Image: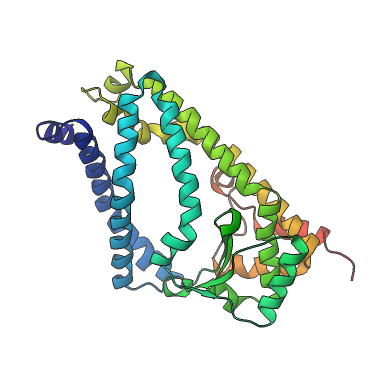
Length: 331
């Protein structure tokens, strides 16, 4: 209410909306800063994961903030303009714009955004590269390159992932992963990631994200003219900007009931990707890699079933390894 009164007396229209949203984002960032420092330099350090310096932490923060302003300001202005200018169907136009923006972000992230934070070097020739190229050929996968990311300058966690789409797909390995796993184990981990691609998991998640965002924007379209939505949350004024802010604040209430469904879908995708890897590499290699990765990440081996149902995107290690053992091919 104080922020609303402060900016209403000084600005109006789109400038008021932009000032309100950025003020709340700034406040949220300031409140989260001590927690972020604690997570990185106390919790991560306690378990031997942290390699980040304070200088790098604040450099990352500065880059993220500048990028957020450069991208967020026009994004917010366009959304607010569409909400005010497109009539009762504004939510459909916002959804079309938001979807196009996300597709563009997926395309430019590998070559324009990611290099702002990490160094990406081509994977050197050798046994590892030969094995990976042979695997890609067996699976019929084409990428724009194999890269190693200097993840070790921030953390000891290891990972491998695909990024981009179309002709801009690339495969990225953390240098920590290459240092920890053997070539056959890395090949198996990559086969798992290829499984996500071949099973269209990324496409399915993207379609689900777009469909759910359409549903939530439609819901906001119904609430934006409802006085009880504002008064029920203790907001005396009623305008487009406040409706957008309030909706995102209460959205976790709407999304929480769907958490078990989304987590279950994600865990099922992991099992499917494991099975794909077992078909194209040795299941035992993936099992050994999983043991090392779960150990290195200090992941619990016996998660609470209720917590896991809501929050775990990956199945417990024991379940994954048991299934892989069933899929091992005779020597």
